[in-house]
Image (cartoon, rainbow, N blue to C red):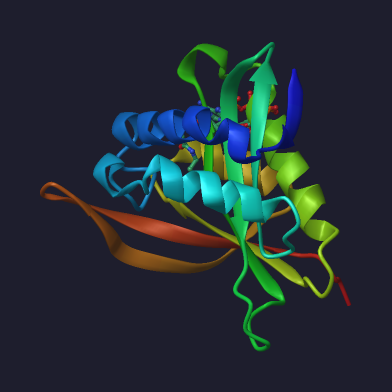
Length: 170
Ligand SMILES: CC(C)(COP(=O)(O)OP(=O)(O)OC[C@H]1O[C@@H](n2cnc3c(N)ncnc32)[C@H](O)[C@@H]1OP(=O)(O)O)[C@@H](O)C(=O)NCCC(=O)NCCS
């Protein structure tokens, strides 16, 4: 299994997996499948990402098949670029429980750690998502806030836990 940053040639496979993740787990992510940007937009975004210290998207591959994804983003603004957000962590159901989620998540943390001036990593996870929360906690992330009823899926509301990893312990 190979984990590597995605580039423009991966856009179609990434977009398909992202849409699948949002369709399968509406309670785990903040977007709907219909809100995923077009292939053209994703192709351009992944092209820019290659030389960026503001965004990357990682993919886990088995052979040529994309089986896991994880993204990381930070704002350019001088007051905000010390914090980056990990988003979109997903492994296809048929490959879960084999260490793949941990591998791609740790790879995302380590890649972000190399960004200049980065001090913290943040992520949002719904409080009902015990598996993902356990993974993040085992990598050192701790709860810094709860955002109540922040996701509305049909008639159901979900709370999100904001978790953080301090990259510059004092
Ligand atoms: C969360 C997810 C990425 C984990 O991927 P995975 O490949 O199954 O994870 P791993 O096999 O590497 O397991 C890593 C750790 O996750 C935790 N974990 C994973 N599934 C779990 C479950 N069902 N129950 C409890 N803990 C679980 C454990 O702490 C595990 O640690 P271990 O290595 O000591 O067993 C995957 O379940 C997934 O894609 N879920 C649906 C989408 C989602 O919820 N994404 C997160 C959005 S914030």
